[in-house]
Length: 318
Image (cartoon, rainbow, N blue to C red; front, top):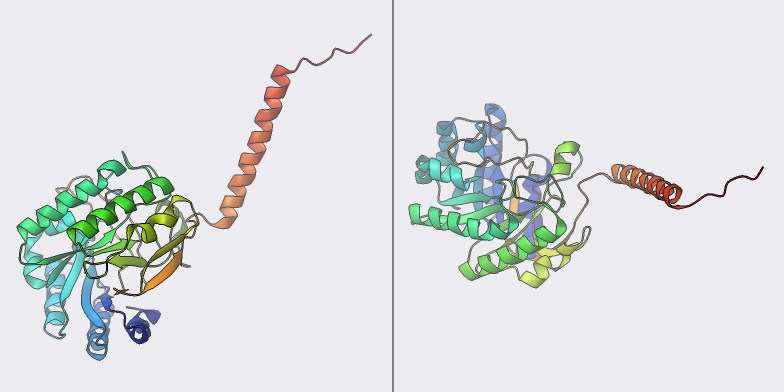
């Protein structure tokens, strides 16, 4: 929890926004312990902090032994009044039931694009995975902490990134989530300064933020998804704190998760209040201009070739 992220609860307080606050933990013990201590202190001082997260995909990425994450979870649970959880992919929760006894709720990442699924299958897939988790852990609340679809990026197997697919996914997901009363947080990729630009270009377009819905405050489909059918539109949403995810590929099988590394983390959330996020292109403007110029030059060349091939030039007399 670095920089101004710890200020989110104080900034949200005048607007009566509920906050989910997170602490990043990894192999840097000194830094992790400082982050946890700051989390506990802020949670004590701010009644609007309603839930806390300790660690983001720690088990998936292997950046910390599971027993060390459990120690941090137990420490925070014994120090704050708020429910405590940690964020992992759905398959990590299925493969590591030992974590469940040390959290009050499961923060689950559902990213069907990274699993290479067709957009038409994505929402049904999420529904099946939620059913699996709720059946296996009936005594725990399950929150979809990350979900989304990219508007730009590489095609991953059957998953195609496009603004149209993003809008289609969000409309279908929001309708299903509201019907089934899921609590969810829709992620947009960070393109903030200091992030790795090439990796950002592969990820969804967006801003450093999230928007959320819950049974008590659902995100209406027309207001949340109506602006996504074209790049650069405005996204009406429940605005949530400062989040800087660094998205990565998700493996196809829950049985073989690679040891990946990432530098981002879920740092702050709130549940209520409507805000507007402007979607930023994931490709920097200077690169867009270069690509546009190259495309224009190429188009002119094609036109000239076609004219040369189809026009019968007059022969010189003499």
